[in-house]
Amino acid sequence: MFPPEFKIFRMLEKHGWSVDAQKKYIPQIPGDTFGLDLLASKSIYHDGVNYNTILLIDCKKNNLNDWLFFTTRQLGEGEDPSRLPIVNWSGNRYLEYALEKIPWKQRMHSKLRQYNFLEQLYVSGRQTVGFREMRKGGHTLSDDGEIGLYFDRLVKALGFELNTLYRAGNPDSFYNFNLLLPMDEPFREVYASGSGDRQPQMEAPDHLGVVHRCILEGRDFLVKIDVCTFQAFEKRLLLYDQLHEWNCTFFAHLMEDFFEGIFKDPARKEFQLKHCRTSFIHHLNREISGNFRHMENKFVKDLSLRFDSNRQLLEIDVYADDDVNVFLNESEEARKIARKFLQEWFRFDGQFNFSEPLWPINPFDSGFFGDHNSF
Image 1 (cartoon, one colour):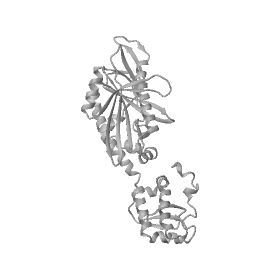
Image 2 (cartoon, one colour):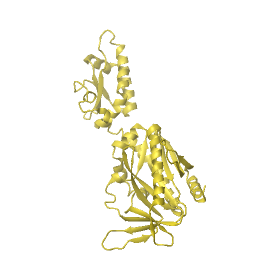
Image 3 (cartoon, rainbow, N blue to C red):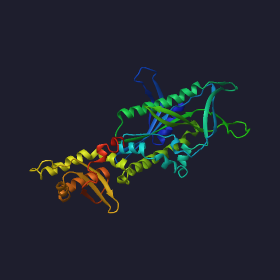
Image 4 (cartoon, helix red, strand yellow):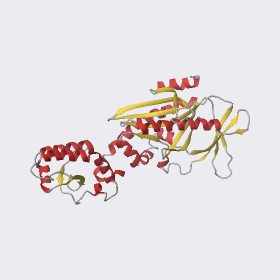
């Protein structure tokens, strides 16, 4: 291991990160094997989910060329939450649903000014429009081959990590990915504001966020590469320490929010009900079969849920004969079955009743509103 990587390695360990050095990525289709200098991770287990924050790190060593980043004003800065360059993955179906369907970026965006570390990580008044290398001591620009190589390696490593999770990820886990490129020497920023006749300004910042648009498995997302000097790395690492604590709190609350007002949101309600409907009906029918053996077709064919906000009562609409409905309401065992399912699958502890449905058939199950599996 080169001394610069060793310095970063020790710094990560001091901050409580678990570190893998020289991680290799081998493509399934024959191609160039490549590696990253360091992969650091932190993990917290909370309420059945393992929350992981991952840092993919490639260290840039000294060479003959300076790196120049050409930047300009970030137009519409802070106005579009969807442009936050954040890459997450979860195998937990509640978190997966929340990441896809709930506008969590808007919630996070609204807190950027409140939490300084988030603002420092994700908000910049400038955008990078290009980069070039320049021979040290000279003024001749060359191509961006080495810079592009480092950037591509980080993005490809991210792709490997995500593909691995998509294929065989832990269903009780959450991952947040961050790409970092610490450099053992200063780099230059050429900033052109685009205002009037102002000349570009040459600066030597200690960090710079470069945002890439990537497509993986048909998914389009933005990812930020945090370019920083070795001297500034620990200062940046403090921000990622705070980010990990934030991830474990913010996204845990997001999973809890899945159940908040669930009966008022048909999409979430049906998403959840489709996972437990068959088992729910099966347990009710087992109870019914012991009491209606002498009659045929005395069983629950389907059920749906609706909440009566005026009476604060959850109606379990049962598609069955009327006397079955009466039985279910009077049976303590049937009510115990329903109470268990409602607590486990909907976190509902309120009053409920077995009712006759408003519809002659279940509109969601019948396809009246389209394929409810798409929720």
